[in-house]
Amino acid sequence: MKQITWPGRSDGSRFKSLPIKNQFHQSEFKSTSKFWSAPSASRKIRSSDGDFSKLPFDILTKIAASFTLPNLQAASLACKSWSEGLRPLREAMLFLKWGKRFKHGLGGVRPNLNKALESFLKGAARGSTLAMVDAALLYWEIGSKDKAIALYEKAAKLGDPAGQCNLGLAYLQAEPLKRKEAVKWLFQASKSGHVRAQYQLALCLHRGSGVNCNLQGAARWYLKAAEGGYVRAMYNVGLCYSVGEGLAQSHRQARKWMKRAADRGHSKAQFEHGLGLFSEGEKLKAVVYLELATRAGETAAAHVKNVILQQLSATSRDRVMNLADNWRAMPSSR
Image 1 (cartoon, rainbow, N blue to C red):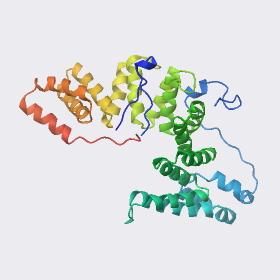
Image 2 (cartoon, helix red, strand yellow):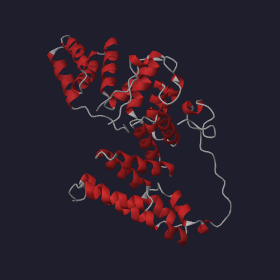
Image 3 (cartoon, rainbow, N blue to C red):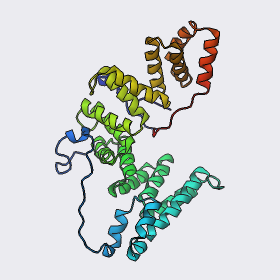
Image 4 (cartoon, rainbow, N blue to C red):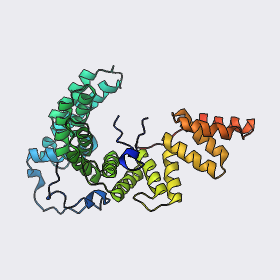
């Protein structure tokens, strides 16, 4: 897994560039401080006692555009009018299901990207943002980036967090680059709790890409993404705490977050955590993490590991290698 996450020395700090496998209107953002503030509790929406069964179908389908099948089924039970109005979106879920089967070769179906795209587009035509995003992903993979961006834009405007995040990432790779538009959409997705968007927004704030550089804001969004299970953000939070960049320096917090990233398969974090363990005299544990980092391609870890191995007995060497062989990464949202 490519893990270039921290902006580099050429950017004036230890952080590296963005990993990828508009001018803000005053009415939308009054200050850049909104970008680093963690999302507050959702405001309560007060509804009138009106007859929701009379809600126009076009409004209903826009509201439910990003619903999953269980949510659509539940909403369809509200009244006969809603059941009828949401029928196209329920149909879209069937096309979405078949699209995934054709894309990944599931359910006894052979992989067929053309049929997958056709199914996703049928779901998108019925108003599902989930299908729009999947169709856009396929368009992007086959090089039809303009078509992908058009679908991401449609999904993003309908409030789909994944569509907003992917649109932001697409703008960061567009020609010409649209950094400010990218930050705008990453912020919208981040407010909805989309952890990848939170991480990418933090990188933009850290590097001053499309928005003024704000180290505290970057650190807070890294932390938000890390708390949501995003491994690369965990590693960056560890670095923030380690060097006191954007967060108050705390070696205890740095070690905690570095270990969390290491235990979830981040090779650079495994190297850093292995070094930390070695400095504390925990040679056996250090070798396990350094061996894992070495296997993941961190060549610098191999040298340190070999130095420690020379200090261990044959029995201890066999034991740590066995631990590394049987190691499994903890689940994460990547």
